[in-house]
Length: 156
Image 1 (cartoon, helix red, strand yellow):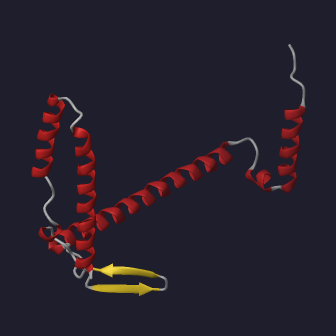
Image 2 (cartoon, helix red, strand yellow):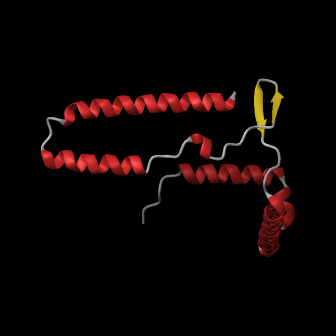
Image 3 (cartoon, helix red, strand yellow):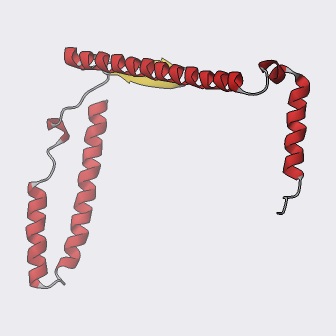
């Protein structure tokens, strides 16, 4: 069935090419001699470089069809990776895992540094650490911050 479809496509392609060539040839008699010679040479080069028939090309056919719900997937047998392809894939997975572990370690160190800075600021501040846990102090900071924001600038 697949080769029949390819043959039909080839026939349609050849018919289209013949129609285009006939259309181009119809207007060629009105062209000057030098232009028609260049077109002839170009046409010969195009014919020489024309693709080989599809039969000469390597065509892979699906060996299985996997169906899941409304989706179908074609299976072509082996994945074609071979031992080197599998080894390369495994190496890439290991490199990815090592990179993710390194990122986690660096982020953990950054978090620990940030916590240490906050602890040092709390311990060296004039207020005792218990003041920060007092809900009234939090309310004082909110109201003091809003009063400072709404106060007019002091002129000197």
